Image (tube, rainbow, N blue to C red; front, side, top):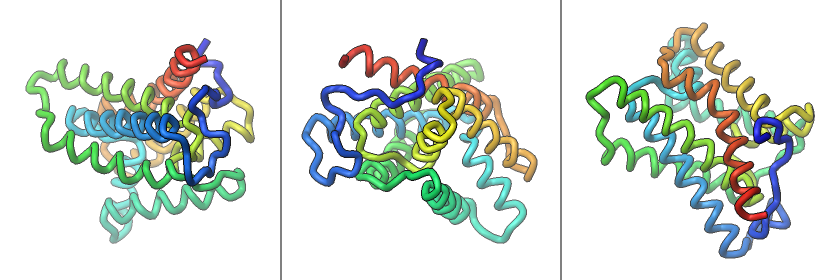
Length: 215
């Protein structure tokens, strides 16, 4: 059962070394493909107008209490999360850099070219699709074993320390983050809750899917 997955699976195109600066073509291709899906999902959530992701809610909540922009706070949160990697034994990889670049590009593409559905139920469907897309994309790029983005690296590091299922670790992280953000004044929508409760199982499903297809 994919909800019980505790390890990032290895497949034929997974990098043998997480910090490989010259990965094979397939490894780099699937890493980028996964990040494109990840960024697409993030963008679709924004376009759905059903609520921001939990980490954006946290940034918004903090911005209401300090004299800094949401963009600056988002950047500082990423730095803080990367600092948390140190005691967890996580290190930067190529995918850490690609994560920031590709996801940012895909979000901009979505905002520019994907219209927001006028019907609320269609917006809700789009939000559900966005969470599934982020999860599957996250699973694909994590299997490439080229490092992870700040939040995914924190998830992987905590999983290794606790030996709990990945779905549970990620869901706990997102729910905790959105709870703090909401307490500080951040706006929570149905899309936010779908992301917070659904992203853990969806990432686990993405890992399960890749493992079944390529092993």
